Image (cartoon, rainbow, N blue to C red):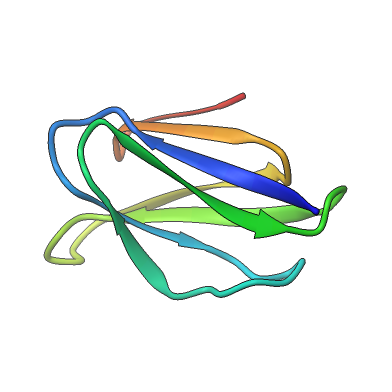
Length: 81
C-alpha cells in the first residue's frame, strides 16, 4: 500500500480532495496551516489531488502518482515531488 502526502505550507486552512481510483475515500478534508496529512492508496496508481478555497469559488489540482508528496502554498503554487 502506498500513500499521497499533502503538505499545507500556507498560513490558512486547506481544503483538499484525493480521488479514489486506487481505493480510499474521496471526501473533502481540511489540513491546518503548516501541517500535513496522508491518504493511503494502492501503489503504482495515479490520483487527482484537488484544492479549493474556503468559499469554493476557486479550485486547482494536480494528477499525481501514488507515493508523491504534494506541497500547497497557494492555488497557483502547488508542487509535486
